[in-house]
Image (cartoon, rainbow, N blue to C red):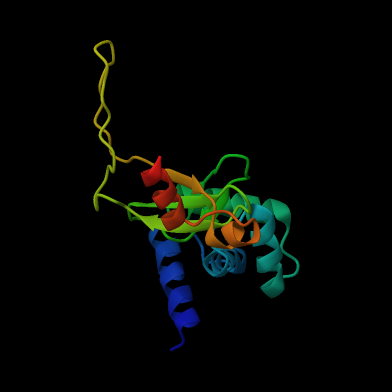
Length: 163
């Protein structure tokens, strides 16, 4: 069995477990997000249309919303960007976004368990039990550092030590 067939079977089983029908639209959207993680809906639509040319934008938005509600997809919204989607769900990872080109990379949780951060409540706050902390790192990727001739992270650390 190919990896794609196994993945489709897993998605089909998950859809059925959530009481959803297994449709070619849902499978096309899941495959598009799997192959193009951290993509906005428009890119997912274009990718899914490679396999399903008759797919409408409205169908993609409905499927993305439904699969996100089912927690089969994760939706996150970096600043100055449309919502992005990925199939990596159920773990405690974060994202790093290049502020120059917009590239997004997954970042493992620094602590290893949720939540990654523990809030410091002020005396007037009504504390709550935190279940997850969504961390977004913003920086400049290595490709942009090279093309813009910016110092690398290690070079910047050396500069900061000298100050």
